[in-house]
Length: 336
Image 1 (cartoon, rainbow, N blue to C red):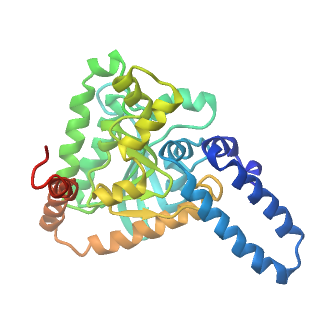
Image 2: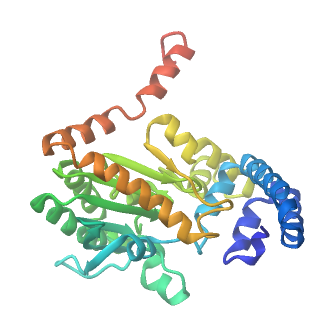
């Protein structure tokens, strides 16, 4: 149970500083469990579960962000390798270049042909630079648009994997039409006459994430985060300060955790992760998301093309309505 023996564990340990005492207790419990007799392990396992639940309850929003950023978390290509058969990756946008920050292609989810698009951050220094740390340029979104157009033409279900701090904000990206590329993807995804399932697997930030997020179903892993801006960016705008306290305050205000977003109707389901995060047991985390994808895909494939498009439109039109209604009640019938 000691997280320090796992790749990227220092990130989680840093994320859970308020729960440092619990981490020490869990490490001690793991040592006792390994040395215990089989009969004693039952009691120790129950104690471990209670400690894991307590640790989870102590994680603040900024702690979740740090876990979501763990470099050892499974990324798009890990999910594709485990869940998608005969994957054929496409490259380039046929206009400018190939963007490594977006992975796109077609393959089989079980026996169902599907279109795939997702962010890829990379792990080694060289790969992360080559993939621009998962921040796509316009050509990345236009590459994704190619598979969305294929999906629309051949009625292929679409599965996307969201994991980016946001789109590349540099001058070159703006010159090549970053905002137009993102807007075009939103329009394309809204019109696809086939099931669309979006999966938030790490950090989903800003329009760079939403460009792959217009789905009939939006799944979100337990320790992932999804927001309009990074906590650091929010703190810099609101307070012109990027100190730890302001960043943590911004993270809480953004309501970026899976529980917050499910309550607000932004996502449809929270997919559980192994205790401590997906990086600790990647195979289990991938399998859990795969099960959720297959379940929703089977249901959505029973709907007509027109119903799928209408369902997507209703979902995004209604987003936030429960929050607005609650605000009116709390303010005596007005939002002021």
